[in-house]
Image 1 (cartoon, rainbow, N blue to C red):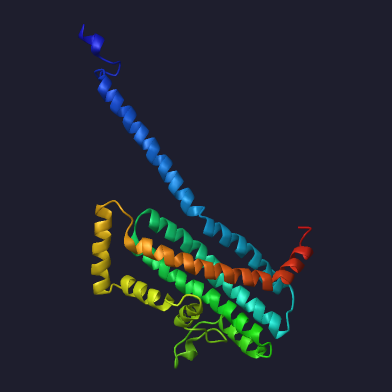
Image 2 (image 1 turned 90 degrees about the vertical axis):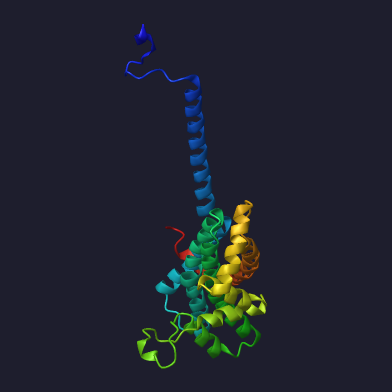
Length: 267
């Protein structure tokens, strides 16, 4: 009679409560998997990254056009140079930075978020520097040599004075702080924001203690950490400036991109 209570594999039947627990665990696992999928979808498909990909595809046409044609006049060369800088050292890293920001925010990781926010200012500042060079030139079209030289420096690498022999580029590039400072025309507090982020990510004692305590209290109360919440608003302001700069570049390069499209429309 005892065999009536034994399964074919020799194990006793499990109670209804245990089977119920199994179903609950299975449901919880499916929910966790679905949440993970939604999380990664939000990271990889964030709207800012999607827009940057569209911009990058258009700016890439300028790069390809320049590779196919001999551009001799300094004005066109300067426009191509600021576009190349915005493409290689702007769009490409910004796509990854946007994804990193989303990932850090989703994980409530304030240190990773601060690192990415600081990088955003540096990279965004480079894009803005190029756009600013054009806006200055556009006010005085006689300054074409200054525009060309500035645009050329965007494609160079900064080397401290006295170390020029180590520079593999023809032009000595701009110091990163010149990129940050170029943003101050539109965002007056940008240098202070950058300095605060730098002090935090570099392990400043006071910053680590202050933000560490604030983060601990926020997590204890199930809230988003303040460094993420506060700097998210500042990044929104920065994005507005940078995307405006990209729109300027798209307007400047419209003719070159149309020529490229016309030539390759059969492909």
